[in-house]
Length: 526
Image (cartoon, rainbow, N blue to C red; front, side, top):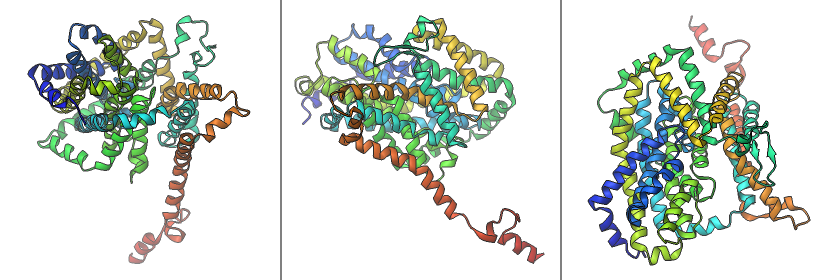
């Protein structure tokens, strides 16, 4: 069933391969924790080094680097509200509130545990289910991607804590931002305001840094006392046994871990989706399934475990269509695809039979890299956490500002991106004070290209039909996703209705009198 796996196992546990895994994970974490340097950028920078290595070592180094970069993005998401990679968007929703409550070390330990489990599940899926599941990916067309994007928009209901109307208004602003530049279908130039540099649109990383980091910096400047109080609480929480208690707490929620890992593995297989979408879906499903959804967004452990488990499972899931069909599931997978082609390796069934030793060495090395996230992540992550906690605000804010400007500029070496980042940050700060959640805006920026491309290409592929738009409602997978969309839209209303029915009625909950049965009993007692 696995030709060459014995040789691969002997090769992957050699000191050289283990050293490559360790170096790759550490380097990837450093890049992932730097805003603006995504996993794709890091892999592209690593590409020339792989030319000097044989195919097995080159792939092992890139796989370990990929795993470390996806995980490393959680550090800045938790500590300074700046996702190091787009895969850590949802981690900021509860990660940064945990930091503000003095629980950043708990968050680091929790995401490390979830990341290890998610990475291992993704590798197992790649190893056992790759060829079978890859056939499902081929059945996805533009119509399915359109509905997948619409399903993503239903997550706004979870992000809009107070007003659903304001939440969707924020999402609409994000969709408008995503239309800047050249249209993916038709090639029209839109909303560039005469700047040719804007034709490529607003980079997602620039939008992430702007909407998440700039408002957090302004908060630190306006109210430095809140961070000082959080630092004092953090210092008081450093009692013995925190590591094992947090790990046991995370492992005591196997349903959240399993659900998030499966979501990450499956979404990772869909070309163009990847961790950007998987972490948001996993967060939303964790919140939907929770008995206390109102606690999400206030610093809940499940809120950081779900997205980080999912985005690390994406690493293995995204390689399923790559190794079996030659279809990259994410931009980072496209770089790995280039390494395969440069070494004369063609993805497909022959890669598992004729090159079984090489292929399984790569897959097993991904599993070892996922395991290495635990010791390396806990040492580096907790060290970074303590360094940030001990840094005075007067030094921390300028350091964050410098990193954000470098990160925004490094995306395209374009000074205009720094201006865009600052403008979006000020916009996000203002929208937040108007009750429009900035995460919903970012959700629109992420999903806008998926929805627009799916709609345009779906209408083009069905242009020979009398009613092209009907193709969005007649394809079996589209119907299935549409049903999930309807459930996702109706679920909040059903939950609200059930909560209202569960409330006591009559004199026991009379808002006018301000008294209930308990009040009457107290009066009788007096």
